[in-house]
Amino acid sequence: MNDDWKSTYDNGMNEAKNKNYHLAITFWLESIEKSQDHAEPFYQIAAHYLAMNIFTLAEAFTTAGKKIKKPTDGYVDENIYDWRFDDIETVILSYINPTKENLLGCTITTNEILKKYKTRMKKTDIERIEKNHNLFKKATELKQGDMILYAIARYSELDDKKRQYMKNIKEIWGNDIFE
Image (tube, rainbow, N blue to C red; front, side, top):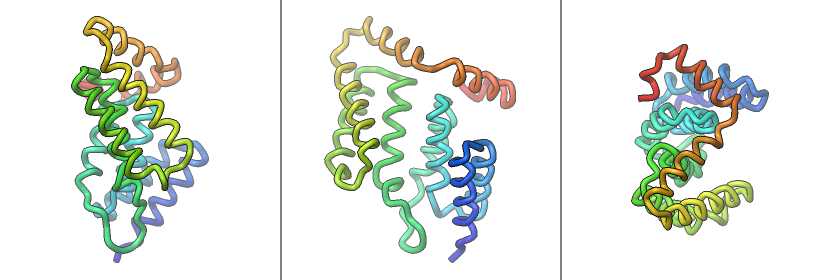
């Protein structure tokens, strides 16, 4: 068993705790290079980009991470394999394509997450998912014109720091990264 990926992953976690996110992502990417059998680094990168509202990258790492089957030995963060990627997907979808059908799907998914895993979740995760669940549920009751206002409101939640970060990413990677 190759535990080298785990020590590199842990280095990324330590850097993230110290708010050195660029270095954390570098370590997480390196841990992916060392072993593609673990979804944990994919999740951490996806969660970081979701927090920065860089949905294209969050979605790409979520999609890749969800394809990985839960390992049967060594370090495993059960929550990542069981519900955290689904949680990220609901948030991404609520921002990038908030149709009634998608929001209904988000409502169903968040409800299932809470039903199955609530007993082993942190209080902050439960509160955040319940808040999102209620938001998705209310949004599905909106008329089509109001759905546009909902999408605008979601975008307006981005603060100036995140908008600047997105601008910097576009300058580094090119505008097509968000298409």
